[in-house]
Image 1 (spheres, rainbow, N blue to C red):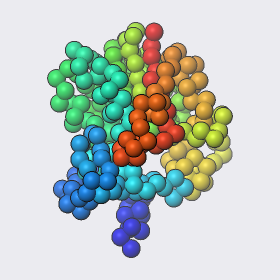
Image 2: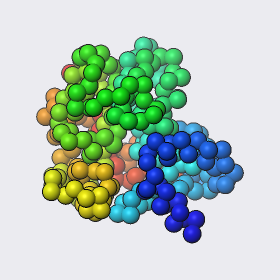
Image 3: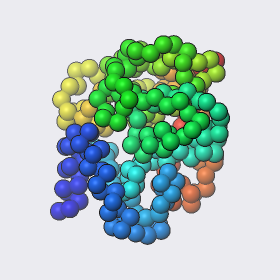
Image 4: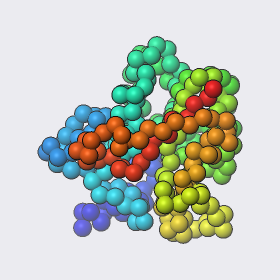
Length: 258
């Protein structure tokens, strides 16, 4: 009964309300899930297990940190930033974070080495609100851009990618994660699919309008980026992947502006 209620609320409540409710839940999470079977590298806490997460079509067990709400993709990005980048050490980095994740925003705001700006269409967490198709900011401004799990929602992802490219400095880099179906060579789109139920069936979530395939990096190349890959299986042991509950087949793409 509790699991059904949790799943219902997760998939039915508006995102802003879920964000606010999560701050209450995190007070009780360390006690409810006390243990040492899984570990979140972001909040640096261990638990007996993580929570389940996802739609009916793409529901996953043991993936959502009960304290800071990280998922597999958040933990992978954090580990990359810590171990493979200068994000925490370089001086005076100008950062644009689109659709800022709750697990990151306060931590990034507290970093003294960042000039940190957040943006979103509706999120109550964001500093400014705008449509990603037309970013109301000057070009060549940012050293780093994060824009995760957005491109599957927008009308014209290539236009949004070009806008991100425009506001980045030469030599800048970006992380733009998306749900990716590695069984598909080509991204799946069908504008005739409009109902929430059918979109969930075809695109894994009711508010998605496409499902990216293996060709996702080529979309960014069309926007002007060069692409490098961070394969977690080459950097973490099987035991680490299981303890951090990372997605074994996930590839983290880093997009660079020359």
